[in-house]
Image (cartoon, rainbow, N blue to C red; front, side, top):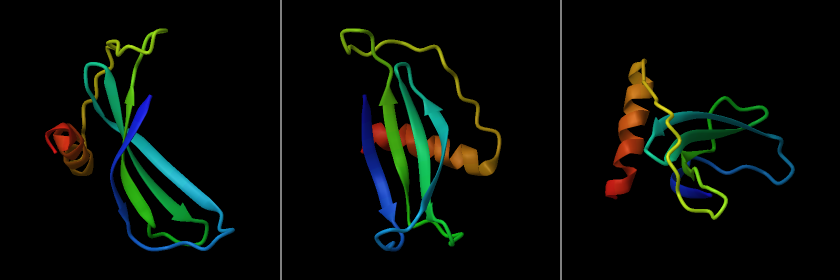
Length: 91
């Protein structure tokens, strides 16, 4: 199960463009993982969209379940993304 939140479209892309997605897990809640994703066109170094997607770990009955994953941000960028992702619930 996932939830799409806080996306920012930076520019448009043309139909038929080849897209490249880069993502990393930036926050782990008790039952959730938040990934920060950026999407690029093949020939561009600037992303056209970036944002957070929240994945919920669920059992066979699709009820949220603890996953025991911990995230420790190390770089300044990772710490900033961690804090932004942590605050998504408050918005």
